Length: 169
Image 1: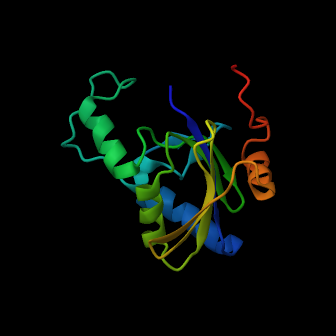
Image 2: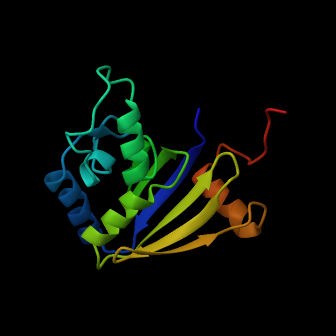
Image 3: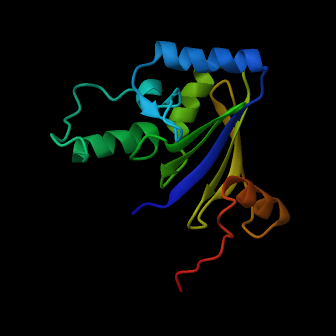
């Protein structure tokens, strides 16, 4: 089972520009993912960076072939598309398996090169906590200390149900 990386991507733009971003992702890119409320999400890795048809797929759609798994890790930075997606006024809150999807974020940043955005991310296992700032396909990454004041605030914001302690001991 993977560590879930909870993330909030928020675009720094007008609400009109945010609507344009949503519409462009829905209208130009292909695929369907479902938000937690059952609506169709624009934030689908399959739409942002589609896997080529030449990649051998597992006949059972519930499983990934080794080739699919490797392609996704190489091109998305994680084995699954975003899940537990919640659309927010300034972007999306979502989870990924094991890592932040930097190749996806770089693609989004290149598509909307004039729009800065930030991604706050926390690994439920405590391996990563930080914020990345994106503009024109370039990232500045800032890691936070888990128990710092800023780190606790971000953890609480991203995962309010999780106090950051390991209760499996």
